[in-house]
Amino acid sequence: QVQLVESGGGLVQAGESLRLSCAASGRTLSSIAVGWFRQAPGKERDFVAAISRSGGRTYYADSVKGRCTISRDNAKNTVYLQMDSLKPEDTAVYYCAADRSWVGPGDTFDYWGQGTQVTVSS
Image 1 (spheres, rainbow, N blue to C red):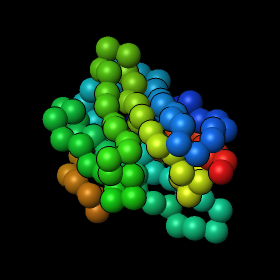
Image 2 (image 1 turned 90 degrees about the vertical axis):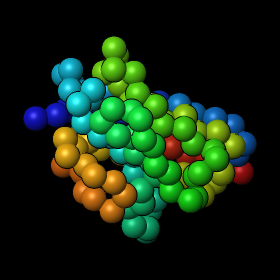
Image 3 (image 1 turned 180 degrees about the vertical axis):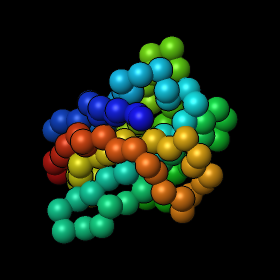
């Protein structure tokens, strides 16, 4: 059982940055893969980024590659998503997800947080 809580969302202007955090209720993130997804009104939920259980592999959607960095701090039991050069189209609710046996892009995640709103104004 994994409990996830996202934070760090807010309102920013285009070109600015945000750092989202995904905190686990227990000391479990060190042994599970973590991904970030986002969903804008009227759109499908999209994959953003993911990091492997060991932290040795990262994955990014083409739409954010070069602008986002996912990382993990096992001591704090937290995964971060640094988002730079934000665009209005990045506006969405961002969700943190985790899975003990995630094998790569295309696979599903078993645990989900409640989401944090990111709004980027032009």
